[in-house]
Amino acid sequence: MSISPPNLFIVGAPKCGTTSLADLLREHPEVVMPQRKEQHYFDKRNINYFDFASYVLNFQPGVIRCEFTPSYIFDKNARFRIKAWLGNEIKFKYLKTFSIGCVVYGYRQLFYCFMS
Image (cartoon, rainbow, N blue to C red; front, side):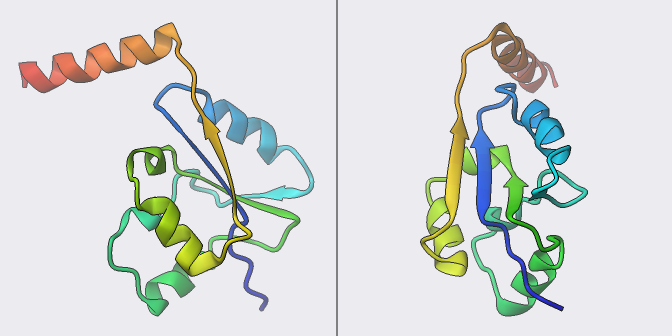
């Protein structure tokens, strides 16, 4: 079995379109991604070889092996952990946009946070 870790990471703010982009890219024949869109693997601070091996098994061989975990945008060290484990050839795409959906999402999060 060949090891095929991701070579493209898509990260972005909430409600900026990462799910729509993932749905579109899933249709492309040269793009592969895990069944679960958000892996959250590099959210962890302590990564070991056994965890890494099980993470990589989520990715099938392909030209573009893509992970979508939007929350990496909020972790200033996630990019360094990714490059430490996968090398400097990794590509990142950051989605940033301001939309009414983002405003509504933020409002709901604050509302529920203070009301619960």
